[in-house]
Image (cartoon, rainbow, N blue to C red; front, side, top):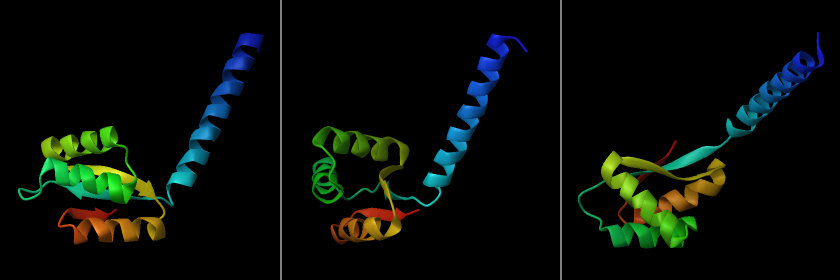
Length: 100
């Protein structure tokens, strides 16, 4: 095997290993999914995401737009025990959300 082929195959093996490790780390994570409704305003959704999920205003606005046009958006990723109080707080504000 020439040097190029050896370099290429060594890097492919490394890339596969990194992808497998990343999948392993991500499998234990959950996500808060925010759903569209006809009740809450953009401003309320943005304010809620900033205060509860620690979004910056631009990130919260982008999530609100995605929810509006796509019907749902993942707004926070983490371990279940971290997400549960955030999801409950969103629900208490009248937003539609769940942990997936």
